[in-house]
Length: 264
Ligand code: NAD
Image 1 (cartoon, protein in one colour):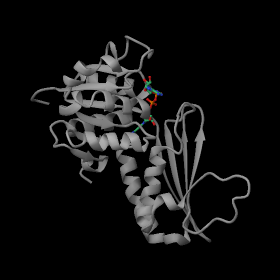
Image 2 (image 1 turned 135 degrees about the horizontal axis):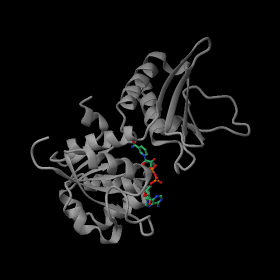
Image 3 (image 1 turned 30 degrees about the vertical axis):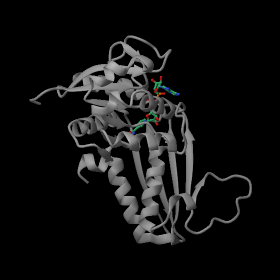
């Protein structure tokens, strides 16, 4: 790439995703990786982003960045946005962290008045396509087909159901013209009774080193349709986040999704 390098800071830099983003960015000639941020007590020193800066000391680093990519945890992202709102004023923000609560969502909305903010529960092109397929299937099949979404992830994942499962649930609800919050059912146990029409079920498996599997089942009376996505390497998400970062650098302030990045 010709032109100036995009100065990048990684938040959650010592985590699995943060390290992967750092490794790919270090090999990508579009970026200058200027540093990593993480919480106090995170393993110091040897990550691809170099020396890790603690959040409290990160203002100068953030001010020097064109783009910040965050793969951390909701509380950490919230603290980053609260403490460093001023420093982030000219920095595009790409957020991969999932399980965001209303606090973080409203801080991101506030940040998007000053900066380009891209959020995605899943940065893979395949999942963006699956979300479209699922929405179309739901519109065609209607409420007569029961939808169950089953996801599987590694044993250390902290939130459930996954942000991607919820994204796919939103797509089903959109295809049916329904509101997900009123038809969502997270797991079943005891005597939940007969399944109501229109319910969208979510089920989470956790174990080993699974990077991320998502199965959307459309279950009719005499036939079943299953749409599946399996991620086999987390560098898939890191590459997507870097693509979003390239797109976001120089973009007008606003709130964007992976569909904007991919031009879908
Ligand atoms: P990880 O546990 O390996 O890394 C999390 C990083 O955040 C660590 O460096 C940790 O020190 C830091 N951190 C700061 N405060 C924390 C807190 N309160 N709790 C936990 N960690 C804290 O996790 P990961 O697998 O790298 O995933 C990070 C986030 O990215 C998760 O929310 C995950 O769901 C999400 N994720 C998103 C995508 C996507 O495509 N959008 C893909 C994979 C993972």
